[in-house]
Amino acid sequence: MSETAIIGLGAMGMGMAQNIMRAGIALKGYDVYGPTRQGFANAGGIACDTAEEAAQGCSLLVLMVVNIDQANAALFDDGAAKALAPGATVMLSSTVAPSDAREMGGKLAGMGLHLLDAPVSGGQVGAEAGTLTIMAAGSGDAFQRAGAVLDACAKTVHALGDEPGMGSTYKVVHQLAAGVHIAVAAELMSLGAKAGCDPDKLFEIVTTSAGNSWMLENRGPRMMQDDPPVSSSVEIFIKDLSLVLQTGKEAGVPLPLAAQSFQLFQSASALGHGKADDSMVVRAYEAMMNYKIKGTS
Image (cartoon, rainbow, N blue to C red; front, top):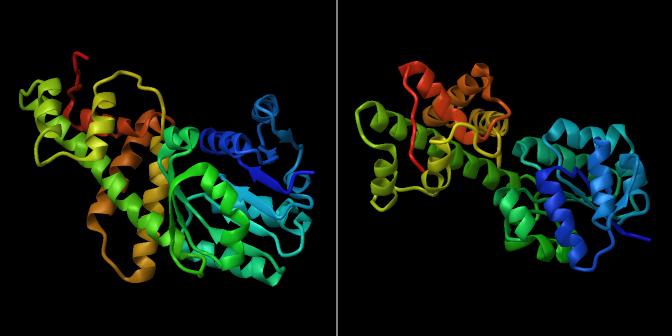
C-alpha cells in the first residue's frame, strides 16, 4: 500500500508526481478533474476518486493546488487530514500567504500532524525535470518524512527553519521580484517598439547588457508572439502579487512597484488574457499605446 499521496495534478503537480514515481515511490493521487486522474493512472499512479481516499493511511501528503482555499478544502472539508496516518506530514507546495501557512500548521498540529511549508520555484519545466527549487520550513520529523520526495522533485532544497510560514515568506518575496521583472520586461519592449526600435534587436541588446533579467530572457520572445504556449498564466501572477501585497500589509512595508505590477496583470486579465501566458501582461501596454509589438522570430 502506498504511504505517499499527492492532491493537485495540474501542470506542476503532474510533473512532481512523475518524478516521485520515477524515484520508485508508490504514489496515490487525486485531482478534481477526471481526465487528469486518468492521465495520472496511465502514468503509473494510483488514482483516487476523493481527497480523503488519496490520503487514507498515508504518512506523507503533498498538496500542489492553486491556492489556500483549495488546500484547506482538501484537508479539512473533504477529510484528507483526518484520513492520514497518526503523526503524518503534509507537504504544502502551493504558493500561499505566510500567515495562511502558519494557520494551517497550527490546525494540523492540533490534530497531531506535521506541516512542511514547502513552496516551489521553477515552473512546469522544473517540475517535469525534477529540478525545482524548494523553500521549506518545518519540524525535523517533517523534513525526514518528506526527504525522498524532496530529492525526487528538487535540484535545490533550502531548509529555512522549523516554523511553518517561513518557506512561504521566502517564496512570496521571490514572487515580488518575478512579477515586477515580467512587468518591466513588458514595459521596456513596449517603449522600444513604439519608439522605433526593432523588437528582436532590442531584445538582443538588452539581454547581452547590464539591463538583462532572467524574466526578460525567458518571457521577452513570447511577448513578440501572437499566442504563446502557457507556462504560467496571468491569473497566477494576479494571485501571487496579491499575496505579496497582503504580506507587505501585514509586515507594514510599502510596495509601490508590486502594486503597480499587480494592476498591470489585472488590466491584462480584464482585456481577456487571464488564462494566457503571463508574458501577455504586455497586452495591457499594447492596449494603452494602441500599438502591437511584433518580432520576426
